[in-house]
Length: 336
Length: 178
Length: 124
Image 1: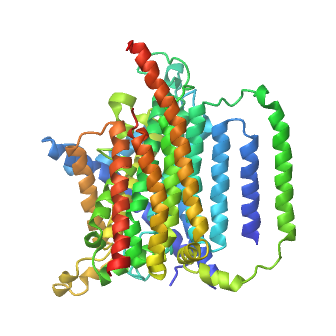
Image 2: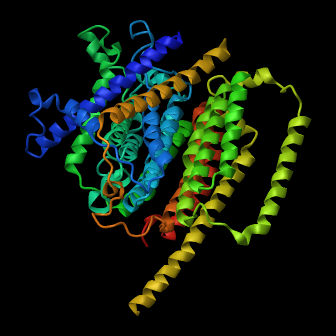
């Protein structure tokens, strides 16, 4: 039932490489889609449809000089990208991508934890250190301002995430992501039972991964590039990587919690028997929907002002999420 | 046993780092490392839920607060603090007392845990459900008291900030000549 | 047997984290080998729109950061208490709902207090 250490090592390595490849091509897809939405082409010169652009970008970042500013705290400056990448990658490991034993006879997940949901929260909550330390270690005013803003934003919206899942846990009675997916195949999708929580969770997740309209760290008119101001070449690329991996984790996490995870719609079984149980494709499809949504939002919405962002989170979003949890609890306890 | 020894050594190294590192942010990071090691220790004891909460609350929230406070107070690493010389003595005494208390507890407590089997049974599955049932059946008064404590925390923080806010407003009024 | 299973879960996470660290080391090493290294004082200065950097970063920050951090800690602890309640929801039933409602009422009090004092608005 549990795979051996070697198999897990290979699976983890594969997952990391897949995530890195997905990161590279997500940057291309994002630029192409943004181009399309803004009535221009986007990168289309390097290879057919610009397909070699990510490779060119990667080569470029490796060939750039890596500058460590003299004012920086060298050790912490070096440590920050490690923290960002490691916790971004490890958060993904608990998300199941298919039924047990469906990956060449092995389980399509790295770890199956009874507290899988909290594990993902814990890993993402550590991501704030990467952002904070990057800005602090640079010892530059823009970096420090950017990192304080981003970390205050991230911790604030982390609460939104936590409050939004309470109703869901009451309904399913478990913190195990695999069991949450199974519950949804037996009953309703949780997006139908918890629509308000879904919305608050989605908004919090967008803020948590610093995407538009919450991309304050990248408010270049005010704070240059925020906590990334003093990072160059490959270290900068590593932070970008962490950001995109976080986006993908967010997309996979929402899909797992609210949209039935790796399972496909049941009615398709009538056409192709067993198609709803196929591993990987449904999760990837659902993730793609959310990734597209993230990019679409970036092309559509203007950036919030910082005080608007904090006010929106603390006064509206959290109260709404809390209300949703209370109503869920009351309905289950008193009505059902 | 070996894992426990390794983790304990790491934890002690982290804890020593907290009090010896001059730069406050470095010390805070050392404390984060200590707390994370403690979480790993919980995992080896099968208390997965506790480990996750340890990371989320201590490492993910309280330490971020510490870092913000360091930023707010703008403490410089190498400044001597002559005003607090007497406090050092008090601090050493308190540390000695605390160490003595911990040692006494460790030596006086029973070697064998009571109901060890019952406990490991309850912890199966990460322990969230078991903790929930214990918390709301046996310790519900303590739970409500924690609520009061947290409320006090909010009020304290707000009143601390509030005083500064009214002062700023007054300053602004004076500046604008109203 | 069971203990070994539980521990292996933690081991897998450690393994995963190690791979993440290794990836960073590999890319950094690659960059160090390939990238040019030609340092001038201008490059090592921190960015301040092309001006010579004035003062350090030892400026005091808005007290709001502290306030929101402490509010976050308080509500994070609150949510941490709610997780075991939500998991054991069925076993606790109406009694649990009442206990949590009381607890929540206390904290909502605090939130409303902070709200009416205007400190949740970030700017006054």
